[in-house]
Amino acid sequence: MTGDEKHDNAATSTMDVLWVLYDRVLRAHPDRTDDPERDRFLLSKGHGPMAYYAVLAEKGFLDPDELGSWAEFESRLGLHPDRVLVPGVEIGSGSLGHGLPLGVGVVRGLRARGRTRPRAVVLLGDAELDEGSNHEAIAVAGRWGLEQLTAVVVDNSSSTHGWPGGIADRFAREGWATRTADGRDHEDLHRALTEAHPDRPLAVVAVVEPYDQEEAA
Amino acid sequence: MTATEQTMRDVFVHAMSAALDDDPRIALVLADISADRFTEVTERHPDRIHDVGIREQAMVGVAGGLALAGLRPVLHTITPFLVERPYEQLKLDLGHQGVGAVAVSTGASYDYPGAGRTHMAPADVALLDTLPGWAVHVPGHPDELRAALDTALAGDDRVYLRMSEQVNAEPRLGGPGWQVVRHGTRGVVAAVGPTLDPVLAATAGLDVTVLYTGEIRPFDAVGLRAAAGSARPDVVLVEPYLRGTSAHEVQRALADLPHRALSLGVRRDTELRNYGTAQQHTAAHGLDAAGIAAEVRGFLG
Image (cartoon, rainbow over all chains, first blue to last red; front, side, top):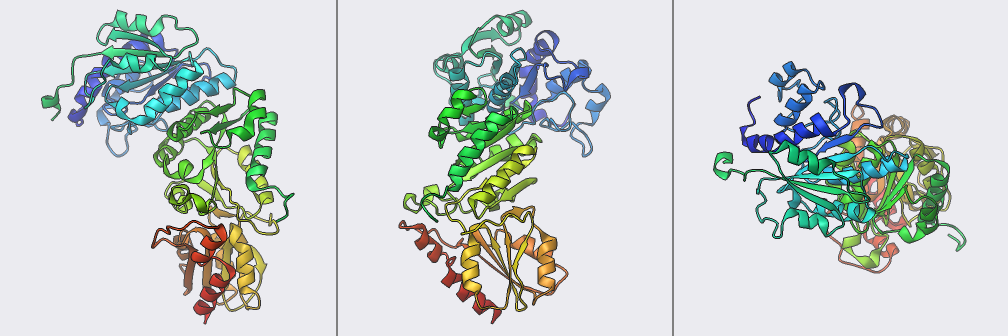
């Protein structure tokens, strides 16, 4: 998959988290994309979706042959994913700061329908947290104690002004359970994503190597 | 209007509460505004009423998530904070996700004149008009709002209900398209929502067709074309929000017919830095009977 080298960092930074989620954590299957009891994965950081498409192909949601034609006019696979086009994709994203408020609504909606088991896992980036809409959702989810909601923040130190005191602290102050994991260590990620966190939403900060500004430019 | 009559907002609160009692699919998302009016029903249905606080981006995002989970969300606050501030959320969290919701605004155009520009959003319908798939209701009477809400709640699509404190004396429930209020030969005056009563006063004694609708999107091109084809094809469209919002729809409806068209509505050439009363703003925008009469007579000659 070529043609989006600008977002290579965004794609590779999420690779390990995506694999652990789809391989070991989420109850998501290509034959059950409409099952109300499925887990929902919401890619909020929609840019650089090459790793996401690759994982979906490996898990049977997409035909691997389709990857080669991505971003062409008739392709279902854009530089940002579209839920209306791609099987198994739960939200269309690309503009930053939309996934977490949507995830709050998904969990509230599932609970209103008596579904207390399925999780909604939202993947964000540390720079994406610049968007204020995330902080609206962080506060509300914390106050509502949405145990079924998980935010995974892939931290490659790309936020322009940074997060003094750490990203996990931002969530903890709003009532979330927080874990920090090595974003390249599958066991560490699995543990962080699966340990119990009763009555609170969970934030997992997945730390990866810093964003390479020179390479990105 | 007598003191015993209910405002659109009263009717909305009552109908919405009943709907929450009756239909487990329905959910309400608030951003503080009107939350005090839903206290009792919130105690009955705490899992389906979601007050996010003063967080309008989250309000729309949560509504989108609720729809993705299979509920029928209603979101409600004051017009600028429902349509303008979270405009991108309306575009992406509802439309782009392919899901629906019912957005119910309160405080139309200059309903809160003392509050000034920050609480006025006469561009609301024009903004939603840039997004595909929205039905837009501009009821002229609380009974019309009630009917529109009931229909909207039963559906799955994206619906905007624009509540106003400006109302006509009588409801007109014959929608959804243009209703012929009066037949004439010298032209057509089409009134949207609460502009009907001043339009009727302005055109009393004039030989014109008067049309009315409380649902401006989808636009009833067939109804307008029929009216313009049976009178002189000079059309005046009177809207209670930004002037010319539906001018492109009029042009499309009459594309094959030599015609003249005039748009009346809230002025778009200036920001009025005035307070006072809604009646004073109506006059300042030329939307009172005298202002409409002067425009219509000048236009029809």
